[in-house]
Length: 332
Ligand code: KG4
Ligand code: ZN
Image (cartoon, rainbow, N blue to C red; front, side):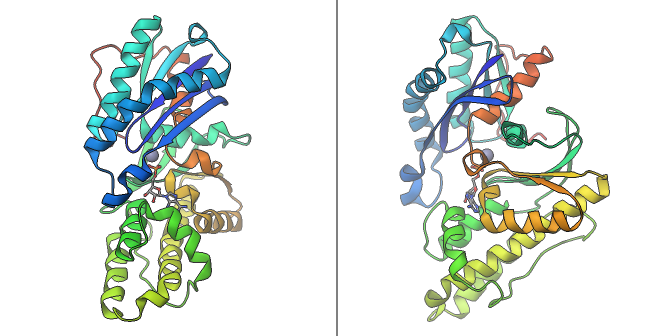
């Protein structure tokens, strides 16, 4: 079965063709980072306009690169939410119209389920049930995953998402946007133990997160070392990254042990973080658990993960009707 995936929930326009929910035939992503960079964050109205410009050529590119014809496709899977309403509407309306024109079904897919399923686009996927740590710019949650489409929320952040904390810390230090990749590149030059930033575990047996404390601690450090912090940027970001990675690793391993799962998936934009990948792998291996983290290009937003989920809905006879609408807030 061939599924066309469409993703426009935030600042990436993406289209992909995936066969049988596992094989990526093409995956095109057009990033808007340059567009939003001067503003230090995503400007929703600009994002929508850019999606509108990009969606048709990008879809054509995905179909051409997959080496298929439009009539070969079985369905279109499109991100329904959560995300920016205006941005979601571009992809969603396009998918509805395109499916109507082609006479094939379309399927609204949850973006977070997309991230969770990104591990199935890799050669060695986890067995069910498993625990998934979802770390992105908008969400930080732990799920107990029963099947491709059945997830149970175990805990989530009470304030900032991990990616948001990376972005805000980078902004405080004047490093640019988005901050995660920048911090990832600078941190190896610093000493992660030089400045001790707080690790907020909340309840050590619970699975909720809080990242506002560490963000405030970094801000306080900058204020109290206003004259010298410029020379300490590598140590500051290394210390910050280490603290965040410690908490994420601890909670994920703890969640897998509580649920008796042998597999942990780490997904979402922040799963691209090299120190987090290393730490969580070590922490899990020490407990005899297997860790599944997608390749870097599948951690950030992409449409292949959306197509992968769409396949499982279609296989179960679930498709969306024309009255279906987008949603902005997480429903998982
Ligand atoms: O999943 P994603 O592409 O979009 C959302 O659904 O939010 O995640 C974007 C987030 C941003 O906050 C970005 O700074 C962060 O992922 N990010 C990283 C890295 N690459 C992207 N954070 C830490 N280390 C990275 N290498
Ligand atoms: Zn995402």
